[in-house]
Length: 250
Image 1: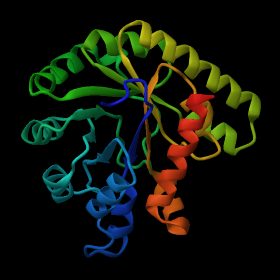
Image 2: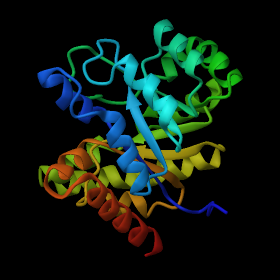
Image 3: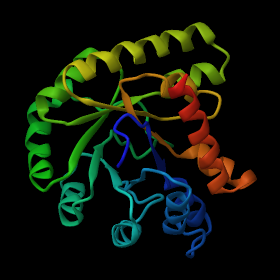
Image 4: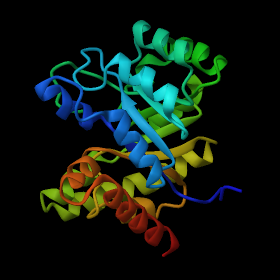
């Protein structure tokens, strides 16, 4: 029986597809990366189908849905096209994220507070189709309250500011970001939302986030794909799992 208190690890395979698309062709295959991640013991796979298809493409989603044994977390912008794709596939989870064509990676959290009416209507059909709907948001009480009102079951707190401050040696700012994440995880949990976290996490930054008792899942991608170049994807994931479990136990 699965341990309900276990901190889950989801691995984002987008940047395997980035490497493939840099040259064209079919190698490296993000679906194979997902299968290797499964073997290494991950709890889910995340893939972001961007509107410009810069990394993951439609065929990748088709293949992931056909082959995965662990749940797929389908990241997408809140557009009519993406809603149609999600309703066709009915993945385990749908995570709505902000998306700008010019950005290198997802910047900031989704604006939920000002878009409540639209997002309520948008989320309804996804929930009716059986998808768990998650919103990728900043650690901000107004956004968290709005996520609760629009019918999301899950929020994923954006950890990018915390990780960037650590990387830049701005430790006071890092600690302030961590305190905000800690406070907002507790706040969201009190509203009945399941709390996930992700963006920019590495071996150097994962432990304090993994130690937050309200956080049920971490989604990590770019760092693990980069680390896989040096030690292999399976060992990279296994080390992340070890650090997560140690932080949780501690």
